[in-house]
Image (cartoon, rainbow, N blue to C red; front, side, top):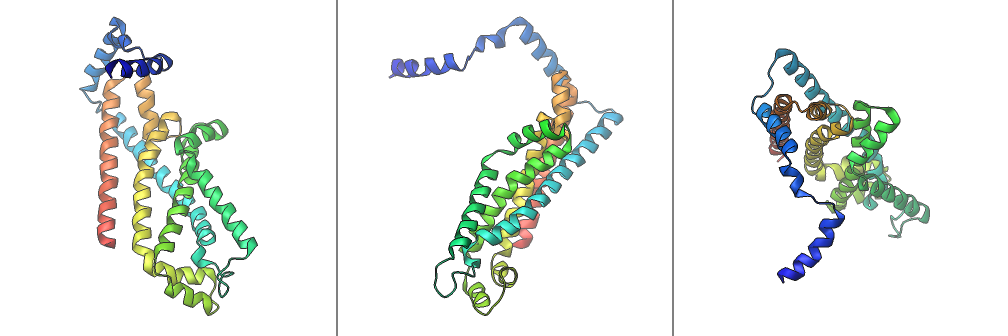
Length: 258
């Protein structure tokens, strides 16, 4: 079995150009040693900490703006793809063909948006709009629009349909049926998922900084390229605290909603 495993693993190692002996090259070991030595002494000059604080707030701003734009697309998409809010199928139980085609088209659009990771969107937008936060905001907006639209529709579909059907049957519009029928049943779950996505957006915005989309990640990438271990250490600590703070806020809000 060991020989069979090695026979299967060897081609993969060759194709991936896996060369672990590079790690033990004297030049590589020297560079790594200097970097780690600096890493154990986090940078803490006032000017540097001020810059880190500014970039941290920018990371949060990128995540919040991106999620807000995502909601502007996800909410109308949810109205369209949620079959429970369909007026054309009232009475007959069958949806009009035009409504069905529109719903399927929007559903496929949501699939496309969430299938492309935000990091890939960020790379594309960096090429289009240049380096900076705009690329990160747009990347989060597109990917999270697809995610939110899909999950929102699933949450609404799984809720109690009685109030929504009564409102639609009595001539209510789709928006009114959503606001007064479906939302009261699903508000807690919808808000909880939205807060969770905001937390994910903060992590994602920091990661997208490594491809030039602004924020703390971009500064960390620059310091890493220059082998400034002390600066990387400080920003990594701040990044961990930022994610922990976002997680704490998320838990507090979910507990309040519960």
